[in-house]
Length: 428
Ligand SMILES: [Zn+2]
Image (cartoon, rainbow, N blue to C red; front, side, top):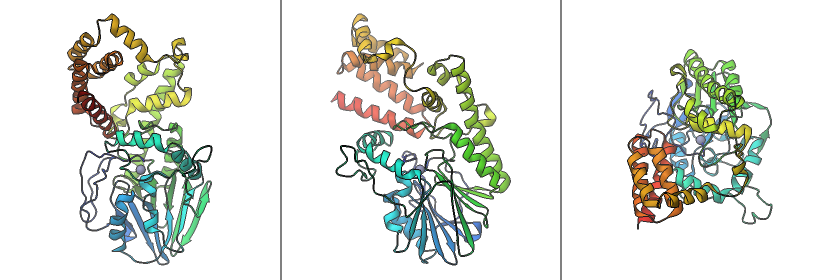
């Protein structure tokens, strides 16, 4: 997740080992009240909680940091973890190159510290840098914060034309596996594509501990994130989680949320998670092969109760569409879609025939109680015809409010808030 998780919840974890799952979504405020690093694996693994956790593993030959959280959390995390040990930081391992994992590198890096990443991080960070302006706008909406509030970008000043290089962080890049020994512990860094193509997991066999990055959190994964993403192939997650299961960890530490503790518990939780992903993938593929359109499948596909893993961050319907579009791209088979005529243009024509935006807004208002998503669509059409129509703006606000009241998903809430802000600006 760069993908910052829920901003809406305000949870703080104080003191030692909290057993309560936080849900997928630690808000940026998560851990703000933490006074002591959490401790796992007999006191060898320490966790600072945040929107993006920071982990420190202590060895006789120095310490290793796994993920570094957002820039805004890094000082706090550094203080919490340095209260446990002040040994040299020998390595920083980044599970992937989203900003909520890489933000604290400058604070942690000492002379002699090596930063370790999977090799796809170079291309992935360049991609993020290339689209920095786009993501600044999208992230601000998704996380309901002002544009620019999530930290400075990384794009080179001479970004155009053709130069999209982001600053390089890694001292060590590897393809499939990078294994090293430090003191009495082995750090086995394994390529595990899932949420990103550069995802790596860290396996410490002596502790039977596995750091899973963002390939698991306590919600259905965000296989399509609304701020925009290239496909996050479902089968990548499945293959990577299978590799984790085969290692038989006794503790799995995600970079968002709380660890899964106990060998049997790990097998149970990750098997269910993998099977949930596979279920949604296979149902989507079956529907595609049967010639069903994406909206039908978004409505139809539901997880059976024994596989339901929650949707506080990722949502099944977005994942269905993500899988569909990931395999097929944007064309829906309607010849009308081949042309640059926008749906809003034909909507505006239909609204005119219906007597203008005001009667369409009245119909939208009537639908708010029973189908607020359809009501919202109608207000989009009404406003395509008459962007400042007050009745349409009022109906749109009602539809957004209704959807927001029902939403249990932090990304959905973020975009509904963004929609409400636009309505409020248009009403002024
Ligand atoms: Zn993340």
